[in-house]
Image (cartoon, rainbow, N blue to C red):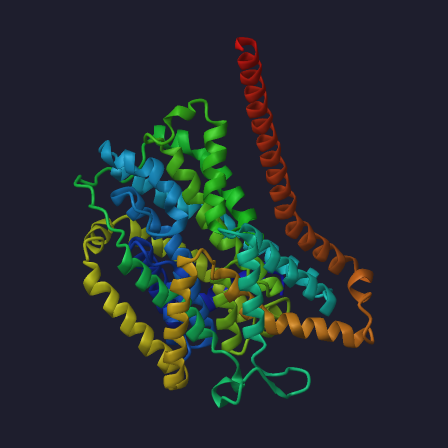
Length: 521
């Protein structure tokens, strides 16, 4: 099939009533999660993952994808009206969105956020439509050595770009790889790291782990420090931006879309980095940078276009290479594998209805989001006033039911609660759970590629050097590992220089004081 035949086939799949229903549920729940401060897309997808197991694979993936880009769309509501980001990707929207609301321009801010999100997301989906198949055909040339190098680079880049210490992130990745090795050896068929527990023979359950790390831990953390601001008391009117607003924002939307799309593809880049980069670029190129932070509408348009473009762009490495660029895509990778699908270049051949149905559903989902976010803005304002003491018990119950329903096993509930407490402690001590989840998902694939490469080379490690693509990926990973060492060494050298200079000043002061004392004597 050529691209246009594939697009038509994907539209036929996406427009089936059951897929339309799951698409609507995904974008509706995504908007809801985006509006509610504290919850994020990873937690939402982890909690709702079990609900897709009894649905057709295409429908389930369409729903989970809808949650992801729906959160990007809905997060700006809270940022503009409450000055509390509903999701981390909406932090930059607070800077100018809330001042606009205080100035009585909440309507244009909400309207521009919705239009910028729609435009950025749609352009990125178009890019995904036409570049995805090309990348998939290119990836067919990849062998075990190339995939090993690509996965090593993905884990390293994510650790490099994650918040906090890179050493802590690499430690989390190592723990994830070890957990991914629990269960049956994929080559020999023997069991390992099970410690005699029958429960672990099938490996550590991914669903229970991600629901604990991202769902339960978020509930515990948000109960400890409740983040809820007062909804600004203003009438929301004039949702359609004026021509002046469009003139100020048009190039901000274009630049934000381009930045978001390319950073979404890069492992570890993601929507958060994209929003910061887009905002910084707009402030840099603006003729009036002093307006930013005081209600500049382009300060709303650029990050909103960037985070939605990044959300769509992140599907490219997942669907074409089988490499998740962020924790949410890692959970989606796990969902595809649970449904018996293998993400990567063969997905287009083996399950074209999943690939093209998901991509085309994103166009439909974007239109649904426009309808949900503009005419129904009053509904989301009321949702913001739901008290947390009602919300979080429901989330906890839903997590428990969801984890049990996967295998009807009480041990899954216990695993989820253990990882929930572990996830809370990790956040308290500055450890990022994202590299752990990514390594847990990629660990078995990483090991399989490594061992297959060694089998084909008869045990020679030179295969990773002789293959140019694999060598390029490994060199890139090494560079990202060395950057923190070089920067930290420079910081230490500067600190030592300052200490020496300070010591010299003290010594000169003491010598001068001694000379004055001798003269007086």
